[in-house]
Image (cartoon, rainbow, N blue to C red; front, side):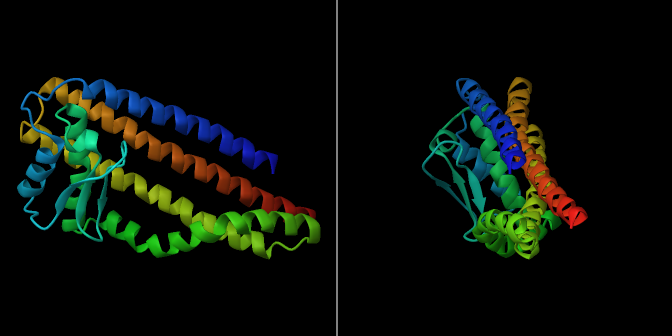
Length: 230
């Protein structure tokens, strides 16, 4: 099991560095006021209206970078720094979350696919860690691979979900950047800052997905290696 801990440590460390860089960029760009003076809430409401979406509410939620779109109750939830912020960073994050609302309203296929996997993901998240841990112990003590195979299959579902998330996030950012540029929400300088902030946000998902894939391959190798020794 040393290998899986090493993989987790490596990608966990990379993830922390990317997250730190994202927060650093957001804080840096938050110090520069948006030329048009719009707040994140106002940017979000404007983007929704421009896309003909009138049944989605823009709310403020506690925390830092806790921003998300909830398709269940059709709400764009923005952290205080984004909701009240009047910077390129706040505008970028607010527009990105509205990008998800636009995806939902236009039945974007990858978002629908991702949403359809949520029930399976919930099961996977609840049972996978226990099944993997117990499955490894049983495999090495009795030779039975059944429990570990089930755990790996569930982990594969979570890994697939993490990769499906990537095009959904990239598409939301592209919609946000394109809309802000077309509607002159940002100046050319602010446009570059918004793109940079969203790039680092996207990298957090990329690192997480690659990390999960590395762990999945480790477990698959463990199973195949055990089979070859049987």
